[in-house]
Length: 261
Image 1 (cartoon, rainbow, N blue to C red):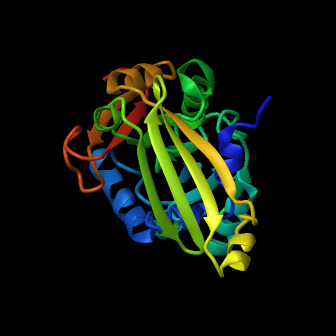
Image 2 (cartoon, rainbow, N blue to C red):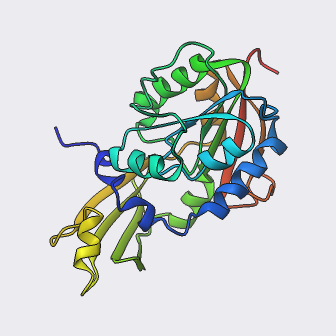
């Protein structure tokens, strides 16, 4: 069986490929969350950054007085997170099998579309069940997800191709709809004269190619999936500045664990 795309996609090159998603954006995202639903007050409550990547959200969480823990499957990204935020607990694990006790966290954060990798009939449901299990009663799951309606409207039957430069890499991205998912083929190659830099990021002379695939849920579909774990949507925004849902480029959603509102 072929290795799943997320094993290839989250290498040491990932923060460079998505360098435009920077610390300033991370702070904007985190500043929005308390406006949607109250984050813990900063008294050392435990918060889980699920799919923490290289840790750009961990520092601001710790600075807010929260006991942040980062979890990711990628060794290279966890090494980068450790270099960035030494002292913050980091755990290597699969998002579908959280190695924490029941009710361990006051909040769980799934940011920068760290959701939808496994499909509605597969591991996404397991992931939601795990999030609900590790949340304390009354705790919140914050989901920063793409605006799937906008993606469907923008792509339609088309195939969108874009080339750009990121550090020592040339990046080719080809996006298309693939059933109930968006697929993005990514090809990374070294720029001439920068092969050594690219090699240090794990991009060798033949380059790297993989295809990201993220499920496209409707809002009602996300709500139904969350409800299987006893999580109920209490607020949402369309971007990090708090635009209404549908008026921006993202869905930033807050779900509460407990009885249905």
